[in-house]
Each structure stands twice: as structure tokens, then as C-alpha cells.
Figure 1: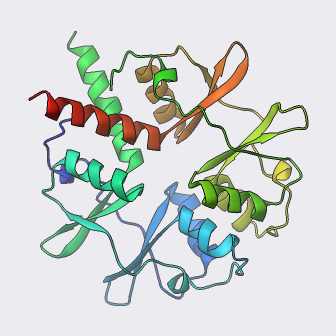
Figure 2: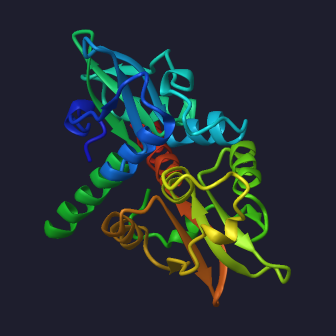
Figure 3: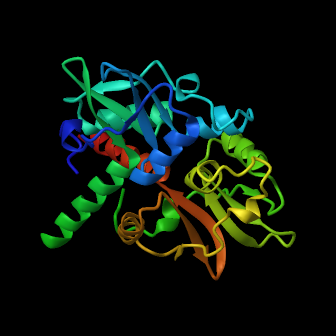
Length: 136
Length: 136
């Protein structure tokens, strides 16, 4: 794990998306199928129009008691938090800790190209440890 | 972040618990209130009898379409994954990555004394970076 390396080295490039009209329950099935904690919401032009996490489902669906059939567009976050793909890892960790978020979208030339999550941080930390153990 | 330090250095000591009879919705309110992703389930003797995460709520409540009034004892994990408080951080990260879990309970002398989550890893990584920048 090189704290000065750009976040694009550590991000996940495969973004999993749902449509704004999909129900919360359908979206949750996708999260479980791919074992992920967040989804991007994409419109018919494949533009990212929203984002939401498991925490948003808990906070915005279960706590207020909305039905599982609620469309995701009603609970998604529209103001995306993004960082540029060349931002150093250490800056990204600082932003995530300050904002208390576990997932952040990565942009390159104005387009969302990936996501970095705390699971990616775990993977990066673990790989670094393996490398340092192998070098001993 | 010292990879060889025991996990008790990095764990969160404050465990937030709910009762087995509490509903999923009540438990979710507690998660939101304390901004946490998992809860321990404690019985009347204050023994930890179960554990569950936001992912379990998604997977075991929303996907199968159970009501929000379902008691947590019906969806909690009874077989707790724990590590001893003296286990080195690097070993704990290895276990979490292998099992694909984001939260692990910490035991000392047979008793659950804390929890370590990926948010604690973020905090530890960030603090290490601040220390190394200050030392430059």
C-alpha cells in the first residue's frame, strides 16, 4: 500500500448499476448477488444519476418504514461524492474519514470510472503485508 | 498502524447491543443513531448470544421480504466469529479478507470485549499517515 499512489491503482473498476425505477428489494438482490455494499444508479443513457449504500437502505427505507417496492430513485443520493482518479490514496482516506463514508466514486475526465471502498482498503493493506512478509 | 500490534490496540471497546426480542426496525434505529454497521445481541444476563450486520438485514430481511417487525433473534448470526485480543493486526486482516467480513468480535479470557471493523482500519491507516507526515 503506497500512500502516495493515485487512487486509480486501488479502485474497483467494475461498477454495478441499477435503474432509477428498480425497487429497493430488486437492488438489494443485486447487492447480495455481487457481495457489494453500494450501487450506482444509471439512466437510459448510462449516465450515473445516483448512488446508494446498504446504510441508505437501513436509514431511508427500514427506519421510516417504507415498502420494499419503493423505487431506488426515491432513496438514492443524487449529489455524488467523487474524487479524481489521480488523487493520492492518503488524501482519499482523509476525505472518507472526515465524511464518515465507506465508499467513494472515482472520476476521470468528468466520468465516473470506478469506486473505492473500505473493502478495497482491506485488500490493499493485506497485500502490502504479504509483500513485506515475503521480503523479510 | 503497526501490523504486529495486538488487535486490542485498534478495536472499539464500546459494544452496542439489542435484545433478541427487539424488532429489526428497532435495531436499525439503533444502528443509525450510533452510526454503526453491526450490533451484538445480548440476553438478560448480558451474555452475547448473537451478532448481525447491515448486510444481514439486507440479505435476510429485505431480499426474502420479511416484515420489519421480525425479531432480531430470527435473523442474527449465532455462531460468532471471534479472535483473541492479543492476535496481531495482520492476522486479523487476513481472517477478515479470507472470510469476506467487515466486522469481527474480539475476545479476552472467553468474554467478548470489543469489535474491530473496517472503519477502525480506516482510522488506524489515517492516523499512521498523519504520524508519518508529521515525522517528515
